[in-house]
Every structure is written in C-alpha cells, then in structure tokens.
Length: 109
Image (tube, rainbow, N blue to C red):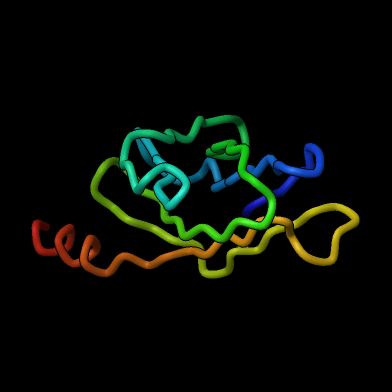
C-alpha cells in the first residue's frame, strides 16, 4: 500500500507499506528515486507494516520494486495511492515486475 501526504506545494511524503507478516530479515525499496540502489532505502519493520518514507517532488513518475533479503524481487499487484481530499495522487508510482531477477533466484534453488 502507498500513502501520499502533501507537505506543501512542491513536495509530497510517500509512505510505502508492506504487511509485517512478510517473513524477512530485510526489505529494501528500489526504484528511480534512488537510482535503483539495492541498499539505499531499507524498509523498517513495525508492528503492522514494513515501511519506507520518501519525500518526492509533486508531479513525478517513478518505477519501483521491493527486494526481499537481497534475492527475491517483489512488486504489488496494484499500486494504489491514496491522498486524502485529492482525486489524483500528486506523484505517480508504477510497480515494476523484474522477471530476470526472479528467474535467477529460482534457478539457484
């Protein structure tokens, strides 16, 4: 789930959340916003969610995926963004499936 919180006229806080029921030692958010770095944006485990928080300029379009334990690429089936009182989210987030990474991981098993 993705939540967007307006901070003013130029930026938006984007919260990425995954269920805390995902069994993992580490999950990283990877995308255009961090140069597809696999270590730059770790998600923090809370009681209900794995969560990462970004501050992004309004109007941007970003592709992203999740990297679980450094080997398993995951995406969301629906990238639903919610902004209270807004018809359209200020930032477009596009989930990306990374089949090459999935294929490499399954070939090792």
